[in-house]
Image (cartoon, rainbow, N blue to C red; front, top):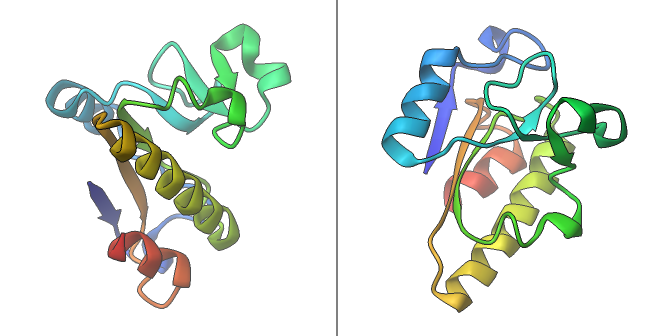
Length: 132
């Protein structure tokens, strides 16, 4: 599942989070009650991935989305990703998601990522996600 929001000029800078009602709807309708890019200041759910897990762990961070130690947690289920709007980071996120999805497919496990990024048709990272 890929949800795209606005165009880059309307994205509100490097991070434009969707509201709590959207997060709640994604959790209710898709079971996606875990954020892959959050911080204690903007997390909707009690546990989440963050860029600074050493500092954020006390507030619910389970680690960085990019940490291989999280592979078992990310092996199946549904997850929300609203990363910082940085094309290299979005590209790396897409590559990691692709690898996790391939592993889940080989095990015949259900795995879903709901990605919220700007409508970046001119960016390779956007095109890679749309084509995946």
